[in-house]
View (tube, one colour):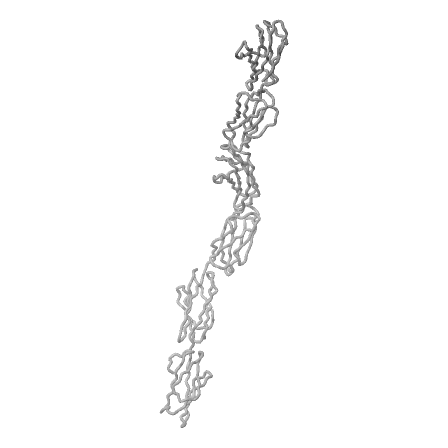
Length: 520
């Protein structure tokens, strides 16, 4: 055989020699692995063993003169493959760590070298015992290497081993603060990634105690608000070692209600006062959004003040908030300008008189104020009218007071205007005696059906006079000649003028032959 270290799966070459010669001989091979080669004249042949083992190879040579047999024993090795490592880590300090090895190929003549990465001398074992234990002297993460080798090959694998000392790294709560009488979840985090090694003992300030096996998560209901002290003790299930941690858990009562009362409409530039209230809750904080672009302001109960810089309708939101709850309420506010500078005017060509039964327009104004309403009362018993431009006609003469009230939601102002209503003069007449004697005093009397009694009476007697003369409603005159005379009366009460004439025929000691009057 030419191969120095035969391996399973390799083609091995065998050479047969004889004395004095193998010339003319035929050979029969029995490989000892259950296979035979048919007779041939080949003294040099190859054979492949399928698996490792020790085999007896027999060859028989026949040259027709004699038959000779011989045998040899060979050991065939298998290359090592499929080395795998597992362990029972993480391992608590002081306890052994067991490393289990395996290979896919034969264990025959396999040697295993363990380097535990702890500074100790590697150990070599050839036992078929799969487990190898090591106890580390200090905590850490170790890279264990195992090398499997035999006469023809080797394979190395690495395995990380975590050796720990029990330690609680932190306890997390799912939220910053819990509401009373609701589920609170807490979770402990250890310096290893498994909780199967521990029992978790939780002790609460409210007198409750819970022991949880192999689970680092606990749910608890706190019945009382405040900063609750919680102690966690973690105990090793393999040793007597333990660790403790104290923590403070925030617990608050929820706010049950928040209210804000609608404020009356406010005059622009003045403080608006809101009434606010809230019930329940631990350490509540209060704020208001005034809806005018200013930042939300912190407030205290029971009132909040704010000054608006612009008129408008505002939606105001009051918020009561703590770490576990938030409650809102809404109020509505109108901000308006105050009514100032109220006035009322009217125009008449007979100013300051207003003509009876004639429509006049009365205009009301205000120098400031928003969303204004105008109400005019004409002082004559008629119903007040809405609007800032109102037309009205008085049905009777006299002195009246026209008043306007201008108002909005925040203020009201009034103004009054005194007016005099004059009826237009009408129905002017001249009364006189039936008989007129020359050189005798005659009394003429003026009268009007309407428009009196303050009218002005202007008299003219033609042909004696050529112009009107202001007089009174009664005129005494002496006719000195016998002639036809015309008496003219002009009546004026400042809103209307009327002309009335009377014609006389005067005779000495004679009756008035003709008397008449007319009004134009």
